[in-house]
Image (cartoon, helix red, strand yellow):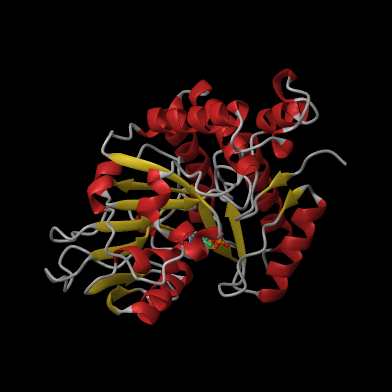
Length: 360
Ligand SMILES: *Cc1c(COP(=O)(O)O)cnc(C)c1O
């Protein structure tokens, strides 16, 4: 069987060119006689890999010099705990727009005072709450958001008004899908297995003056972000393979016009799918229109049996991983950077055909 169109939410599709390059390099990386998986993280070879990856990421996002880039491990989930360890001194505000923000909130509450500022739970997280005038107070250390809600398919198109309090954002499922002004954040991070690389690597971008030695005394060194930044992510063995693949993806992004071009492509793909959903008599999108994500697109037929039939038949047609998250039901198409336009066109064609056959 050849490659399928993979609509998985994560780990997710990666650019075929990148996979081919990694395959070519597999046994003998650039003539050094070993693979990237086998080389010392203290070698000159790996030093080039991590430094180049960081430099390319800085170029793609225009990261200013007063921000550090850190490569971490443990999933975004470990950062849910690491963020309050490092930054929660008095109080933190959390905006709950889905499962990931809620999990992060729970971790913060274990460690100090965390306040729910707003939530969209009342409507199954199908919208982003109004964040223009939240009950944010001066004594808050940070406001936390999950910017693109992978499960529910919502995205903040305007960042919250934090009233001068530093903003921390989980951008796992929209990272590098479009340009991002890093200076809006004190700390912004992504698990790369959604849009950028293999599972096991996280990238955090942090304003240096937000890093402090005043952290929870029990913070493990590998979760001490100031120390990790000082050690340039090499306090211990980093996720070498993941960093290497991310580096190849950064090169791929640069070669393909950078993040402005990527945004244009992603918007075009999303428009094709949303326009069809808006015109369909069988399928409908689950998210309030103005809050739609261009990365994760959940949709339903309103009939569980028909949903299951759609998932099975689409799989047979080479359209994989369209089943929605268990908490939402229905379907979800994740259409990350590496999903070609043709993949979305094929999905829409399949949906049109399915609608004709199944509309009662
Ligand atoms: C997938 C995801 C997570 C969890 O990532 P893990 O690597 O499984 O810990 C957190 N936040 C967002 C937005 C995600 O999409």
